[in-house]
Length: 457
View 1 (cartoon, helix red, strand yellow):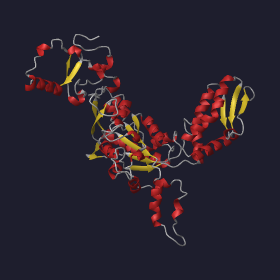
View 2 (cartoon, one colour; view 1 turned 90 degrees about the vertical axis):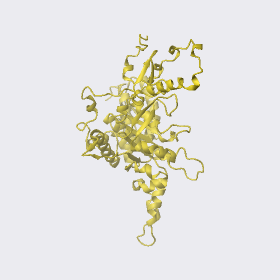
View 3 (cartoon, one colour; view 1 turned 30 degrees about the horizontal axis):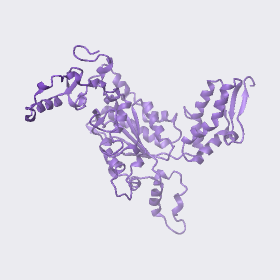
View 4 (tube, helix red, strand yellow; view 1 turned 90 degrees about the horizontal axis):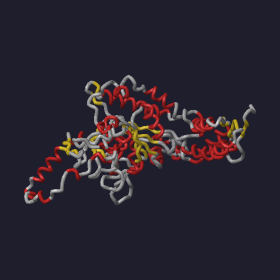
């Protein structure tokens, strides 16, 4: 119920959110302190002044307001009806304790070798990528905490990772954000368009980060943004229309990647008159871009084959055709030929590639990670007091099937879901089953799993 001052006391946690101007929809951190009037309306000083100026205008001197005796402020809807997802938390003036420093400080940020060691527990292979990411993340958060060193400003270490589909690009970013306990927003570049066209504006990337941080601007300004499918915004070739989802998006991302004060719509993918906005500084936000960059291998081969020759001991043109990891040879020039503009690439100084998965890596992915998919199923059956085992031929069969599908580690889940369906369906109905062993013949559809009853050990 509203009190004598017209304030609503139903939501006790409203004090932690900023007030918004009823007219311009800006929070107090942007428009300044608002004037509160019943019933629970807040108007910034700029809008209040503009209202007075309009009333005092010569055009309004002929209006007789006495003809409208029923008009009063109570007819206006209170602005507290704004959904919580569009409210911004107030910035803390001073931390009451050292809690804010416990999250990120020079003492508790793990060193690069410790970050890599933690990644090793979850991600198989990709040694160079894990090392490059560990160093870049460590340097970035040292820069965020110290701000400057001896008046030397440290530049951002935004990253661009390349790798075939299913090699672990998104999984690496998810893992490192979880280990550091910082907000992570994952977005898809295919949904972005130039401002004014159908689709999400580039500011929607920051809107997602703000939502993940529970609309806490300070927390979001220390987060990580992963832009997937970045290769889909390459310049369109042989087009005579405006490239609203390609080069224009790259240009729109430039100031966000480098660091600037950006007006961000709260709880929406685009700006409009009815959407509240707040200001975020992207200087301390780490941006990681990733993409498969299909057919860039042909560009790399074309560049490398320029040095081919004829005769004995010649460097032949088909030398690189069987190289599955030729993407390691990628350079900035290759990315420019692919369609990425140089200004965009210049804001992503850390460039590295991920290896394509081979049979041995697939087998390691099945066995070694802490949350390996086979361990997940073993845990599920353990809850039914059933032991699940896989013999060596089963690992081989799963890896061979995944390799033939050419969709990366994502194929493992689809393969395992298929042959585990009947097992997960039948076991709960038979309490006498104590152990199930999966064989390679069962994976290939030539046999059945080996089932042992309880008490037969």
